[in-house]
Amino acid sequence: MTPPATSSVGMHAQCHTCNLVVSIPSDSVSSLGCPRCRAPVHHRKPNSLSRTWALLVAAMICYVPANLYPIMKVTSLGSSQADTILSGVIFLAVHGMWPLAAIVFIASVVVPVLKILSLLALTVSVERGSQWRPRERARLYRIVEAVGRWSMVDVYVVTILVALVHLGSLASVDAEIGAFFFGAVVVLTMFAAQNFDPRLIWDQLVSVEGEEEEVDGG
Image 1 (cartoon, one colour):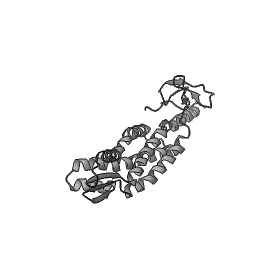
Image 2 (image 1 turned 180 degrees about the vertical axis):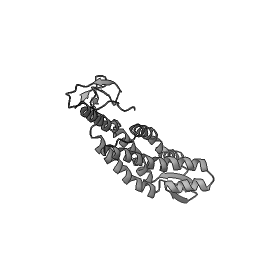
Image 3 (image 1 turned 30 degrees about the horizontal axis):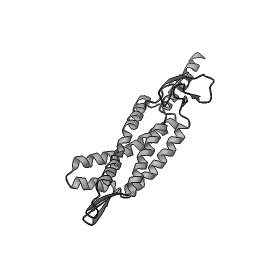
Image 4 (image 1 turned 135 degrees about the vertical axis):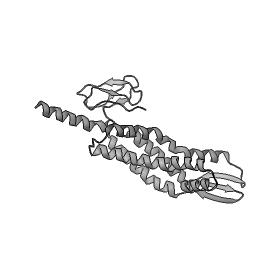
């Protein structure tokens, strides 16, 4: 979903639900309703930074047990083996399935970590009023929002195997507690990206330009 693009002093805002551009009076302090879908329309997402921080902290907490606890238990001919994300990657690599191991490692380890670090960097830069490379930071946000959902590869694989492999004592696959925490990490980071308002990246530049114009005019 394309985030609304408007300055804090602008007279228009884009609906987050249907993307309709809505005119907002300059003296309006409360949110208005979108005339098309009736969703609330704001110049900026309410409490964007505090919500993003809360979701990121929750995601980081869940990420620890997601890697420590098994994500899947495979029972074959009476013997059972429980694997975490990293042990599963190692198992695939040892058995010569390097492409699959690389996909699982990138989707389940690299992407979540980079997404959390990127959102942390964006949130801290906005809170500190940074003017460093706003265009690149906005592009980073769009990349994070686009690729975050692909971290669900492990969860999809476990779900499919649990549903398909039911051979009694011969073979079975069971989801473990690690899958729950990993799914929580993915969902929490997706919500964190949705709650972060990228327009805040540009607000500091707008305020600085306004101050410079006042100085020049004075």
